[in-house]
Length: 253
Image (cartoon, rainbow, N blue to C red):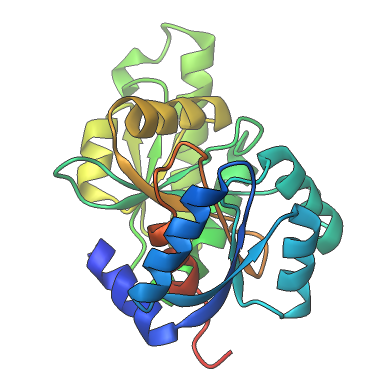
């Protein structure tokens, strides 16, 4: 099972070199750096611009990066430009109060629309779970129960999409289940939860993290090939995000 302790242990074992963005709230970032280094999660370098930080990741100067409190728009634009990507896919690592950890995707409002993009999230999440040494169990959410078909064209669309994602993903050998609208069951039994679309995924993330205080270590970009952990500037400390970045670096790199 995925636990914070598992991630912290992997981070200490890897002890990678991790870059973090240093923006407006420099004291919080620097405090997080001290905490991460004190706990042995990583060697940490700070960057005052997204351009410099992404260039350091691309050149291998650092093994992984954490956005920290740099501008999200600027950081995402730099990743797309420097790695020649036309879209980004992020999965946020969540831990509800008293609950088990899981990855939630998509969390960007423009991500995860349509059957193929949801399948892409599942395919691109598989290496993440392999790196963590844990089997991936995915739950695909839709806008209603099967018995709700016919009540709304939009609800019908999400249900039919989820059923198709389940079918196609299983054909590719993935452990995937259509969990309907029952997010309460999905988060108890699955370690990857796929929202119906990027808007609902973003709302789920904000409700859990910013309203109810659910812990989020950060959101790895799944289709990058390098380790980039996106973070919310609302986080009080980034030490756990630095640990996640270090844990996801391939050993022996």
